[in-house]
Length: 382
Image 1: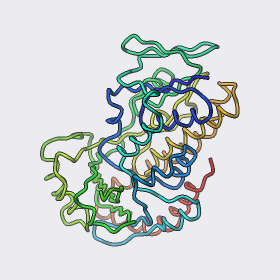
Image 2: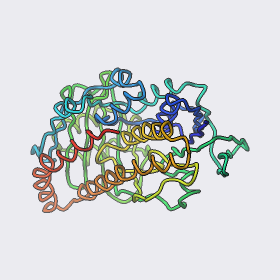
Image 3: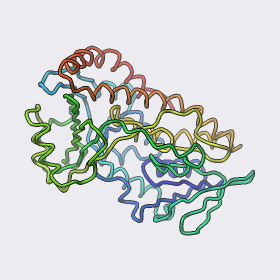
Image 4: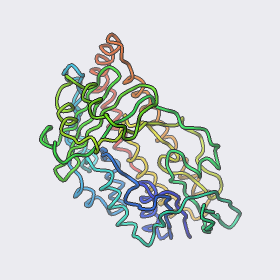
C-alpha cells in the first residue's frame, strides 16, 4: 500500500511516520522548497494527549529533549488579578505524559529527521487529483504525476485537497492577529514550569518556555484583519498596546528585536460532517483548523496521524478504513474547534464592563468546568 501525503507540516510528517510504522509506504509532497521553513515564528503547548501520540511515533524522548516541561498554567487579568491556576503537573501524572512547551521549528526538525529525507519531496505543489477504483493520481503544478493507493490532504488552512472535495470557501477570520516569537534573551522573566495567560480589553498574551533556555511569547490583538506579517513599527505598537500590563509581557516585547516578531492572522472553519471521498481524506488544519485559544491545533494533527495509521493497519479495505478514521476524529476535533472559537469570541470583548464580567466568569469557569473539560480532553485514549 502506498500513501501520497500532500503537505509537510506537523500533521503531514506525523502521518508519514505513523503510516511507515504501520507498514505502509508513505511519501510527502511539500510545496515549500526547504522543509525546514514550513514551521517558523513561534511555539506551542504540547498537552499530554499529544505527547502520548508522539510516544506512539517513537518520538516522546526527542520531544522532551527539545522542550521545556510545563507544570502549571496561570490565568490573570490585565489588572494583575489571578483568575485561576491549572495544576498541569498533576494532570500529567494522571495521564502518564508530561506537558511540554516546544518551538514549532524544533518539532518540525525532529519530524523531518524521523520521516527521512528520502520520504519528503520539497518544492512540489499539488494542482489536483483524480481517483478510480484502484488508486489515486496526484498531479503537480510542474507536470509531475504520482500514483498511490490513497491520498491524505495535510496541506493546511487553504488546502487544495479540501477545495477539490468540499469546495473553495474561504476560511473564517477569528477576529485577531497573534504577534509572536521565540527569544533566547528573556527566559528569566517567568519561572520554570510556568505558563502565563493574561486577558485584557480585546487583548490576550501567552508566555512559556520552549527549551534551550528560550521563551515563547504571543501577544493577541483583536480587530479587523490587517497588518499581519512583519510591518515596520510593530515592536513599538506592541509596547504601546501592552504598556502597564503585569509582567512579563512588556519586558519580553522590549527584550525582543523587532525583526524577530511576526504577526499571524488567525482563522478557523466551521466543523463539517465529512473529510473525504473514497480513497482521499484530510488531516490537521486541512480538516479542522481552529483558533489558538485552546492550544490544541497541532496536538490534534498529531493525534489524527496516529488514528489514521491504526485504522489503515486494522482495516485494509481502503474507503472503509478512511471513513472509520473520520468517524473517530470528527466528533473530537469538532468539539475543540467550537470551544476554541467560543473562547476567542469572549476574549474579543473590550468594553470595561464586559471585561469585568468576563474576568468574573473566567474565575468561576476556568477552575471548575474548564479544568474538568481539560482533564477529559487530555485523558482520551486514541
